[in-house]
Length: 393
Ligand code: PXP
Image (cartoon, rainbow, N blue to C red; front, side, top):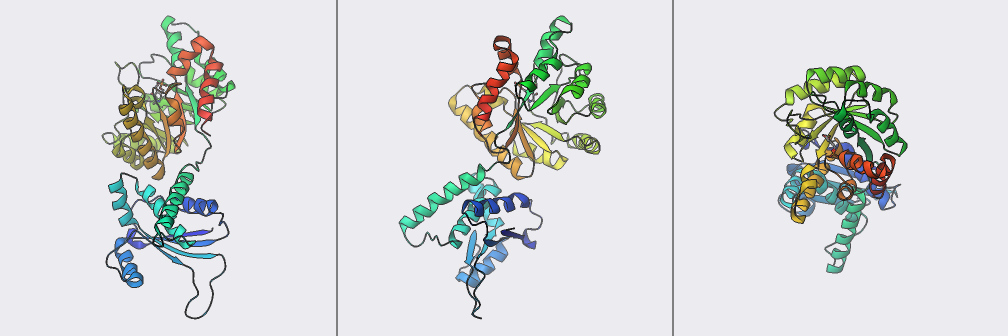
């Protein structure tokens, strides 16, 4: 491993995504074409940082980052050629700075690692204003590249076929069949199929879920309320994942995210049962930091961020505000170790910015695709959506 990340005991209990930080350090060396170099990055607290700051710079108090390029010691021994040196980062200071700048902790830590690394390879903003600007520009460019080095080249597209069943239920017959529709979506390139088995069975029926389990070749995501009857069906059928959503009898469609904070115990219990059965759980949440944290605490594997308010925004300013919130929450969830899906209300016009977010694994889209399918055919409707989503890769 080219980067050796160490986490001091002083920050022992702080929630840090160590794997992500290690990954980002390694990506940085790769971007700098220094794969063979060895760097040590130490994450510590303010007290230790203040001690180093005093010892090596004769300055009082902590600082955010210190770099020590590898150099020969007093003993005359030169360091190995590929050893770059050490970077010390104060997590406490980074946290304060992140709060001030409205960024996540891992965002700020990544900026500081980049800053420290550029110092190690010879950049110095204190030498001249021109160099400070050059270093600043390069830092921004590297940050952008690290952030967009996503695990999947583009998000997966899962199609929700509930509304095929809505049309069928309008006459109470057998046509159109959501099971057949799901196969057509897959043939057109969809990466997954989503159905919501509601307690009132207004569209998807038990028979659909059972048949889909047998026919879906990609991934079957069962959307459901956290109620015993549906939990039992999920455990029996064994979808590839479930998504817990709130459900109200009178709503036209799912109206808001699940209040995980208020239902933590019940949600945790269901996650425990699903874990035993090997079924990953996603929780549909509003883009809200407390709900994301509660989903993490409850043991969810994914959160699906509710994009409804972004999609329904009536002004550009409102849409931008909602988008920024989704962007921040996607980053926060990803950095805390959750996988991130998004959906609700996405259509051919508003999907692109959401699909382009680097932290989104999968988009769940139903109404827009099924509506368009009535006019252009289901496979065309899926392909047109895929063309937009895949364009971000
Ligand atoms: N995600 C969740 C959790 C949903 O409840 C729904 C609606 O069933 C969707 C995504 C898809 O929303 P839409 O049909 O508006 O694309």
